[in-house]
Amino acid sequence: MLQRSRISSFKARCAYALVLALPCSPALSVDLSTAAKEALIHDAAFLAARKKAEADATRFGQGLGLLLPAASLTASRTRTDFDVASNPNASIPGSALSYSGRVANTYVVALTQPIFRLERLAVFNQERERSRAGEANFAQARIDALLRVTQAYFDVLVAQDSVSSVDAELKAIREQLESAKRNFEVGTATITDQQEAQARFDLATAKQIAATNDLEVKRHALTLLIGQPLPQRLSGLRAEIKLQSPEPADAGKWIEQSQSFNLRVQAAQSAAEIARYEVTRIISADNLPTIDLVAQKRRVDPLTLSTNVYPRADTDVVSLELTVPLFNGGIALSKAKEAIALRDKATFDLESERRNAEQSARTAFLGVMAGLSQVRAFEAAEKSSKLALESNLLGYEVGVRINIDVLNAQQQLFTTQRDLSKARYDTLINSLKLKAAAGTLADRDIDEINGLLAK
Image (cartoon, rainbow, N blue to C red; front, side, top):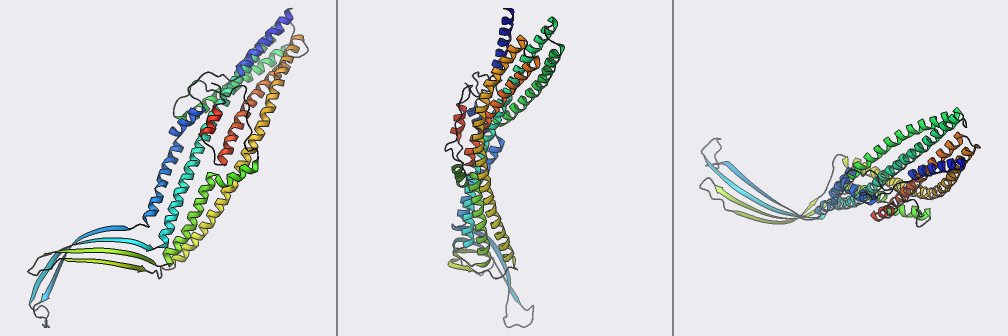
């Protein structure tokens, strides 16, 4: 009867330790969706990308301005002093001269409309592509911010689970150590059992210190992203959740989509177009003529200094101006070679981004599929480990198992639980990375994962 009571006591203590190892789920003010929204307000890297996007958005207007008319107003005041010979036929310098002079204000209004300037058209196309690249880069920066805050949030959850698991392990080992001491005192166990339990207890204490320190580091990293302090504990995943496979469950379709809709690929496409237009700009500016329509109105208001009267002069001129480049010392050829080389480089950069997008999509897809398999395997291993621990506890009480067997079973259970927790978070992160590689990651995906958290 006493033996059955002691076995029940050990099983109760073990069950309490297992409960401590499970994630707590108090109602908290900060969840994943909240953290993502706060990160978009406080994340310095994302805010810098936003300002860069605002600057890039002005590039289209700058390029368009090169094709529109340009108006200017010029005002000047001139004074002219000159000598007039009193005898035009005098051959002796310094003969009798009369002084005459005038001051005049000149106003010129000019309007210039480019008619044929291929280099300006190329610059307009370049600025348009720079604006598009800015939009793609900003969208990618937003995706990066969402991934960054989600990873930081999950890092905190993993660290929390590790601390909970180590605390539960430490409590279970303490119970086992006390049991070994009691059994040694009554002569039912050897000093070896007590020493083994003490060694495991000391090791678990060291693990607890490391896990607590890691949790503080991860919490601080998340705090920097969201710009506000965290509650004592973040809400983790619910105990019973079923992770979904990616839709579609075909790696080829994800890869195909990533090569077209990946935002880094789109930015690289714009960069390649910019480099191509740069070749056109260089060749046009240094080799082709330009034609401008110029309308000019000139007005001269004289202020006489002598008795001579100079009437006001108004002049209206409309002209077509043709400029033909002839020779600039061979710079044009050198610039053209440079532009062609940079164009080829941009083409290879685009191909590199396509390959990176393909690899990212493939890696993330395989990570999700492997993660789902790992989660199922760890869930089965957790059930087996619990049964194994209960069997070893019972065997230790009846004398068919030694203390080291119980300690090993405990460690296996807690390790399995930590691995299961991390596998779930890694699978969710890979699912987000898969959508990011395809250029489709949005706030709703974060909200869906947030729905899996305990409330």
